[in-house]
Amino acid sequence: MIENIFYKRSFLSVDDFSRKEVELIYQIAKKMPGKDPMHPQTDFLKGKVVSLAFFEPSTRTRMSFEIAQKYLGGGVVNVGDLNSTSIKKGESLDDTLRIMGGYTNSIIIRTTDENLCYNARELLPDIPIINAGNGSDEHPTQALLDLWTIKNKVGSLDNLTVGIIGDLKYGRTTHSLAKMLNKFENNTIYLFSPKGLEMPEKYKSSNCIVKRLSDLSEVVSELDVLYATRIQKERISNGEDYSYRIDKEMMNLAKEDMILMHPLPRIDEIPISIDLDKRAAYFEQARGGLVIRQALLYSLLRKRIIL
Image (cartoon, rainbow, N blue to C red):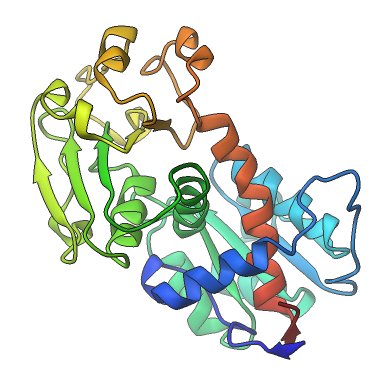
C-alpha cells in the first residue's frame, strides 16, 4: 500500500492530471477487476457510495461508472432527471448538490451546463466531483479511456499521428482528447470538420503539431489513429446537414495497423460494415471505460492504494 496522491481530488478537466498522474492511473487500472469472471467483485470501495447526477442522456458513461463502483464493492445512488428532485418544488440546484454531498462520498455529474461541475467543487471541496461531460466543453474520463485504448493498441502515447474528424466545435470528447495528447511528446494532430464546426482555439494542443485540413484522404495513409465523432445535432440550431461517412474506400487508404476509434454513439458516420474491419476499435474502446473508471473511483476514494 502507498500513500494516495489522488485521494479526495476532483477530476473536472484533463488539465487536472499531469502526464505522470495519467500514467499512474493506467498502472492502477491493471490492478482492477474489470469484468473478469475469474476476478469477481472486490471490497476495495466497501462502504463508499457515489451519486450519479446525470442530467443529460447517457449509456456508456453512466453504466460503466455504476458497474465500476459495484464491482469495487461500493454503492450507487442514481439521482435521475432534475424533474424528479426537489428542484421541481423550487429548491435551488446548489442546495440539491449540498444534500448529495452530505449523503455520498462523490458526485459524478453529466450536464448541459459547462460550469456546474466547477460550482459543485466550490460548494463541496471535501468530496471528489467527477465531470462526466459538461455541455460542449470537456469529457475528461473519456479521454482517459481513449488514450488507454491507444496505448494498448498502438503501444505508445508519444510520436503519434492522429486524425480527429467530425463535430469539433461541440464534440467535448474531441476537446479532451486533443488536450490529453498534449501531455505526451511529438504527436501530430490533423483536424477535419465541416465548415462552421471547427475546434475552438482553446482546446488545441501547444505541445503537438496541429493542422486543419479539408480532405481526410490527403493524410489518412499517415495516421496511427483515426478518431471519428458524431455531429452533435442537439447543440446545432441552424438546421444544416453536416453529415459525413468513413467508408471502405477511405479505410483502404489507411495503414493496416491504424486503429479507428469513436466515443459512440455513432449515427451514420461509420457504416456497420466497417465493424468487421480488424482496425475498428470502438467497441473495445467502450469496454475500456469500465476498468478506467474503476481505477479513477478507486484512486479518488481511498487514502491508500495498492500498486
